[in-house]
Image (cartoon, rainbow, N blue to C red; front, top):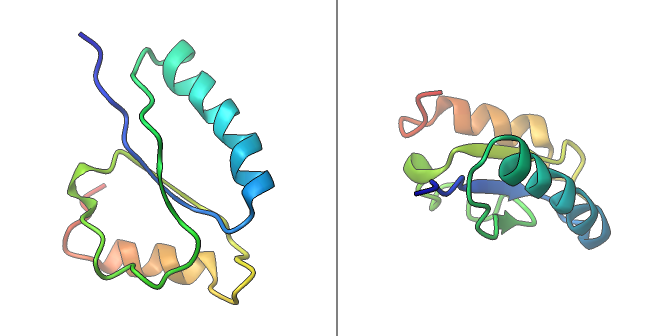
Length: 86
């Protein structure tokens, strides 16, 4: 039985997301042997306080989102959250 590897991905650019998703999928499935469910994608930090981080295994953040949300601020918020322990 393979385990699913759940990803939360902050990316606002469709071309970048779709291109990198295939690379990440290959690493998760082929190299690590996990299942690759469709990542939970956020295009900005609008819902950041509502996200349940407990089932997330990997967070990928674009550092320069087009709507002026900064990836560093997103990472800082998540690190300071009481839900994230890694």
